[in-house]
Image (cartoon, rainbow, N blue to C red; front, side):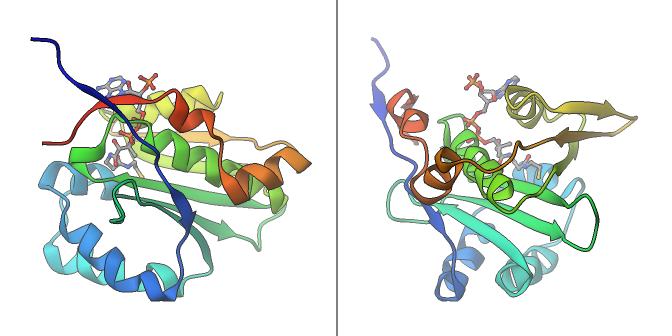
Length: 186
Ligand SMILES: CC(C)(COP(=O)(O)OP(=O)(O)OC[C@H]1O[C@@H](n2cnc3c(N)ncnc32)[C@H](O)[C@@H]1OP(=O)(O)O)[C@@H](O)C(=O)NCCC(=O)NCCS
């Protein structure tokens, strides 16, 4: 029998202080593999909780994806704003049941636009070498990949701000969901 495919919209918006409880719940729903990929190694429940509790207190720009009204994906842009030329670090996370549905790509597009609009000239993404999904996303943004024994560092260079990048940051790229088909989460 043919598998049913469902079209989703990632519904991405900025995260604010009032989203704090949703963030903690989101991080608690992660399985061991996703946690390991996100943090680059095995981490405890306590570490994950503490991390989730402080995300919004940092000088960072955070976006969340709400495809079913719940927070299912988070993108963090942490500034290394004292550096010149300005650079920042990117971290992405999508809950296991919602992966491979285009949410990660839509979140990354939004972060790249946010970086572009802030004049950030270099974006760094660090992931485990085995993380093919993340490496694939980085390649789509023409990132330079530096591979060592266990990790890959991807470096992206956002162009100067444009009216389109302002639009992208505020509203997202409709193509990122119009073209996305996926199998409904179990
Ligand atoms: C990395 C991550 C954010 C990607 O999010 P996602 O929503 O699954 O990503 P998308 O569905 O937008 O796109 C993933 C792309 O990788 C591809 N991909 C997925 N698994 C893959 C694999 N094993 N090998 C190669 N490509 C793979 C998908 O096919 C897709 O590319 P396509 O659109 O050309 O088909 C998500 O997998 C995740 O949260 N992983 C755990 C945390 C993590 O690794 N974070 C990164 C370090 S900070």
